[in-house]
Length: 306
Image (cartoon, rainbow, N blue to C red; front, side, top):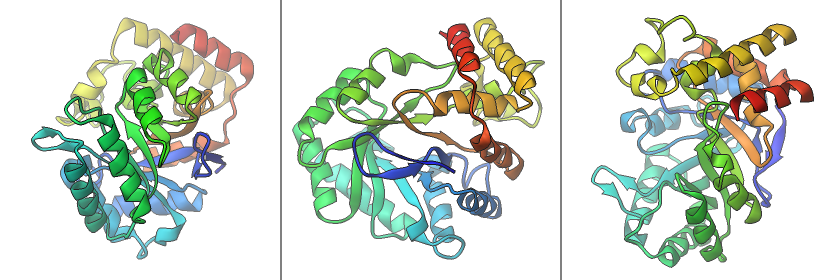
């Protein structure tokens, strides 16, 4: 798997990242171990987690696999802070306490990338920046970034984070969700921040599995995933999915691979993070690494989804 640097930093990550959103909820420990092993064997390095993935269990599942299944040093582990059961709190006190809890849950002494999960209107941006810098200075974090920020919020945060520059921002980005192109991506590129594209398959809709309804065994039929999928089941989305399927047929590839390759190679994207519920889905994601979209097909998909 090819590696890329994130933004203007020296942080290197695999251009496809492994998401752990369902770990500890829909994905058990054995399945997670198989996914992680296959991912690393394929050359993957970036593993994305969060204190709230899997209902709070994802990081503990990952902790059980570190060193026992895969050496910690072979992974670039990303997590976040700022969202708590009571709401948003990005104060220095709350951020650093949550970081300590994350390190404890993961059983590691540092994160490779730590991101503020949201904008906090009640905490001065300089205080947030100081907390990030402190985390780096104390060795608990190697690089810092931001998730869930609008373009102006990212630009404001990046301008304040001179002591420890922001290197990454994470946001939803796919053929069915291109809002990041309006302001977030331009702001990120201006400040040398790389984009980690989340939900690049639009909850699985871009794989074509929902063209004839919602399969009983799909994420869209589950209590936890139905709301994610429902927003993509529109007539406009159906036209995009049809174009993806047509392109896949012409290339002898899967719709998953076509949709993932498109977002993976968009300007400013450092990595596309995909979480699979089972190993069969995960194998399809890894196979997408081999696909390079012809320029004409990429442009056609760009047009139909614009």
